[in-house]
Image 1: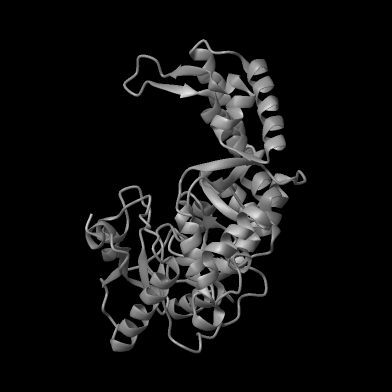
Image 2: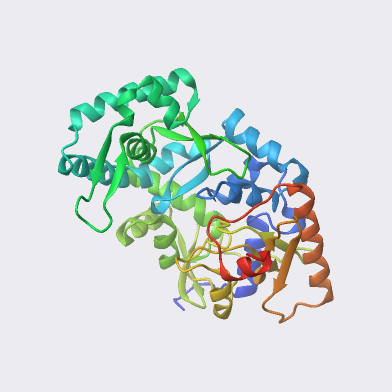
Length: 395
């Protein structure tokens, strides 16, 4: 422990998580905008995750589907776009410029260069041709408001052009210009994911023109994003910060300096909090339980997770790529997992019974009923399935 560094133990870290992640009963939010603003980013790779993560944190979960859809597709207060680690997230719209400058620019340059290189290797048209198609497609998207790739190809037929990727290799494939170009435009912050084609669980979606935003200095944007995240998830180690952002360690350290982050002592070593957040945080007034979805931003929030998730639980709750499945929480730690069966029943299993008595089981059962109540007849299957989830679901 460094001179003057305050020690923040596991109990206080769990208290911070309960309150700042809107999981304790009294901390629950009134709207999806409040949830996203509190968490900075909701994992959006699996569309259902967004709704399930919001519903777990709303004081009135019955409004989850309607209100989240409104925020995303009517008011556009939330936007689904590429962000950290080249992953799709849902952010408050006011963060669009910050995410793009802090995280998207470097990835976008690599993505466009890779596409042009692959097209050239396949004898496909050049960068000038691709730019013409891009401008035409964006103009068509602006006219339509939202559209699928197939609908855009009706306006710009060149989007249907195909080229062979990795010819002669074992992973050779045929790529369509629309698929690859729209992905690049998404990383570049020019288009975002729009309304799904089916229900709120559908992975098929329309595209929309990205909200207009100013161009920010990348270093200033990184400081802004890291400061917002650390205010919610601090204390966090340098390894946590590098993992969550996907930045180089030099970028993380520069951003920490820029925001005047304060070091604290953790069981893992040195952690950081934002200036003014070194003091103690009281535990929630009441014990709490939560059922969080796969890829939930709380379960995936830190690289070093032993303080809220026992290592022996990981084999059951994570897939082989490191994606977390649905989890059961009791007072700031993961104690089990849950799934939805074909008949809609929400089933759960405790994996860690230490300190989990009758009160905890009753609270978890109540949360399962709460979830079943607002999900209704909709069937939710995680995109990334984990051993316990598959077993509980009867897959």
